[in-house]
Length: 555
Image: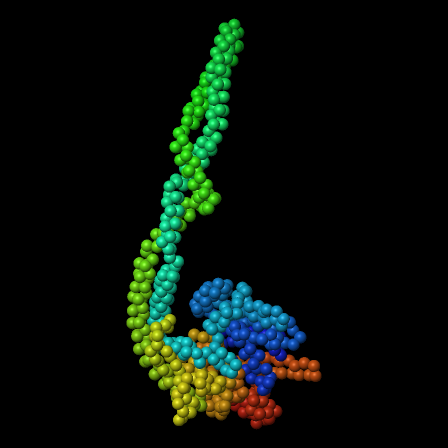
């Protein structure tokens, strides 16, 4: 339910902050006083579109904010999660919407930015409007089907069916995407295979690529390297240190015999000579490894050129080339099993569809049985609401398999005897539609999960005992819902658990609208009811007002 409602600079209203409670709330005021401002505020929070002209003259923007208690209703948490909006804190849903006079407005849900579409989705969860100028949900086939399913108690069965339907649609979608995927021509397939073969001809491991680059660098500068190695071999061999070091070693040994302190130095020189000989041998080994035959050199050059080409196209690293190779392998492999995959998906979809058709038959049987009961109960309730000769039927007809089964549901209505039953939207006025909805909501009160119901002109063209009965039904509906009703009938207004009075004041320069709660102030409420009866100053009207309120208290 709505716990708190703030309205600022909406239409003729400057500011109003209402603390609201459960049950049946009536809204009254003189014709033209601006009672629609409250309904307009709720309509904004439900996500309905609004022109910038609703901003009060002289203000930059209008703001409407509400705190809604959603308690343990898991539907709100699920929808907020689906819409990627902040969750409720302590079961409190906070909605805020502003309409700016010159730029885009803002919407917030639980403090997070939201879109109009998201606000509309949430609005469909918490409020129903019934009256002129508001969305007539009752006229929509999906709403009529939903109400019938509520009466039939098909929640669990319908959820099972819907899960199967989603599964079938996913399978068909996958099959269509697979069948429509781009197929390779023979030339394209041959080209990709040749590319894959070239990649497979190289060892593309990191170590192998590093070795290839090293070997190619050595091969491409082999002559330069060979000359350097020859120079080193000569310098370290018989033409260089190899000739000098023996003489130096002999001199060092002679010096050590004369002076013992020269002994360690002689040993160090001997070690240097051994290390020089080892270095010369290693350089010689490198030189011998350069003697590559022309065929081997050509193979090395070819492999290096291929690696450079692959790196340029798919690199820049060996990992990038390996990823491209795997992609080509998967692309070619997929060409062979497309038909098999499509056939498998369609077969699975057909299997699910067979189960769905069986479930749809069960749903139709339950709906047909519930349709008679719902129509009978609604006709009885319509009689008490002033439709003495009205008829209402719920037609369930076979239809194509769809997300809710294979049924087309229509509510057929005839307000007067001698007329044909026709769909509601073709014959029901706004007031009649509101009373039909009141009748259906009353019948479905125990299972209807929409917490806030708003009625406007539900008492249009009725009065006396019928008006009182409308009020009693609204009050009874308030036992399980938060019900708002704009009314002109004092017998309806007297039955409200809460009573809001809208007043309009004017002077030469401005007009203002205010909302005041009078249900806690007996004298003011009596005065308002007396005004509705004809004259707030009349003793007779005031006595009648007291009688109405006393009658409610005693009932």
